[in-house]
Length: 75
Image (cartoon, rainbow, N blue to C red; front, side, top):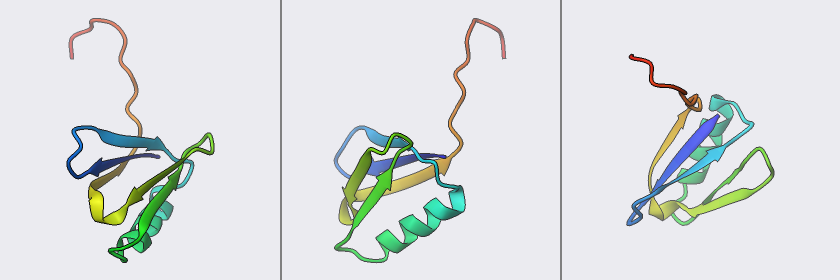
């Protein structure tokens, strides 16, 4: 699943491809956000970790990754 994390006062969002399901990610995120002094730690498919202070999280989006379109076809 693809997870996008918006961080306060940052123009870019952080994107992670996680091997976890949407339900597992939601549970992990909810437990991290329950403490205002905690951190949110996500691990991607390659084993890299993303650590964000919970008080700086603006939003979190969980969804399927978009497939890239190739060509100039009309929609």
